[in-house]
Image (cartoon, rainbow, N blue to C red):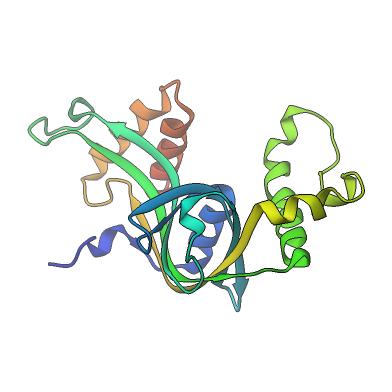
Length: 212
């Protein structure tokens, strides 16, 4: 039996790209120097409508950096997630679970020792992430040109910039698709009343899928 089941898989690469851009703070997992994971922001580069490359950087003192070049990597982008109680379904005999969305990217790491690559990475991260927080205040989007002269040059030796050449992208969307519509509507109604932002967002996704 295939896992995850087909009903959880999202084949549209644009959906995976959208999740990665809205939730760029992802887990980088490697196994070359012991099993390690670091959570860092990533840029997803797209060509012909498909993600082909991730860009990011690590603190050079992170043990994960040692021998990083050429290693296999798993990068996991966590989207919205929420608990679902059995009380919210018509059949109380089925256990509780979580509904969630995520993207798993597998690829090979290439360390890039180029300060222009690093500068562009930081500017691209800022251009993508800062607008997501525009409601905090009316500020210009920050970029490296706003730093004091020589700041980026002094910072560069303390980081390790890299890219992940993508080999596969898998998006999972587990939103009770295999349940009766009555259950899905009930779950969405309950989640919509939650004080948790993720729960309300999942409610909206379920409602859109059933045509509400």
